[in-house]
Amino acid sequence: MNLATAFYPIGKPGKPWGDEERAKWLSQQSRQRSYESEVLGVVERLRLGFDVEEYGCLDYGTERYSLMAIRSRDWRDDLPVVLITGGVHGYETSGVHGALQFVEQRAADYAGRVNLLVAPCVSPWAYERIHRWNPNAVDPNRSFHENSPAEESAALMQLIAPIRDRVRLHMDLHETTDTDESEFRPALAARDGQPFEPGDIPDGFYLVDDSVSPQPDFQQAIIETVEEITHIAPADDRGEIFGSPVASEGVIQYPLKQLGLCASITSAPYRTTTEVYPDSPRATPEQCNAAQVAAVCAGIDYALTHH
Image 1 (cartoon, rainbow, N blue to C red):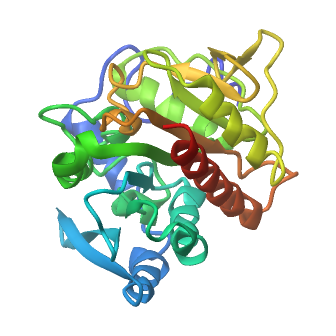
Image 2: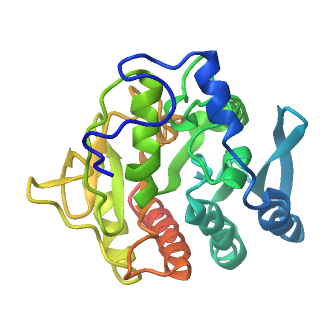
């Protein structure tokens, strides 16, 4: 199939989706893995050393999903707050399991130094269906703004509202996958009645900085740590990664708040979106999780020593 000329099988070219198209799309989504056993099961184990809370719930048809957050048990008002989010796009597996792995394996290293708040799986319905959107065909990671159309995004914003201005670091853990090009970007174009413009998937890890308030030294510190775990995505022939100019090795920039991205939800001076590439022949799932953990640790270390 030639992606440059093919059109998504739902909808008509040039016409945004209506209720009928969204319903047809939803009917084609199927549950492929278990949020309860793969995510909530791990969260339950973490109750031994952390405070765990349900910060919201999603009711989709007959299914109910508890939205869970993990906090430092020794929370102190004099310590900086570190926010870690994963699974904003549910299909991006290492975002979820990297966040959980960090809590299990490395969070104790920062006890008494930071207050940790971790939302490991912001979009559990999409986690189970290995999808980018919620069941209303809405992308939570373009929905972090007032009157959000995504319940997932609204619930997370409500969770962090009391500490929004106290967060020093926000790490939002993501992946870029081959299905971005084969499924999700074509679906987005079809949903919005726009032409699909094929692109190239970068092979390797990269970061997304805020173009409005960039922190290049912070981003580079993370890149230097992660490249010991997995390879960093090179710029393409146009000097870009995924259609954006490369600001420095493995780093691109987006206007986070303008786009309604999760990394814009706090006033943190240090914030980034990680992008792991799990489909690379040079990376294993274990490496992808480890890269997320390494990125979080590098981010915390930098934020603690440069504030």
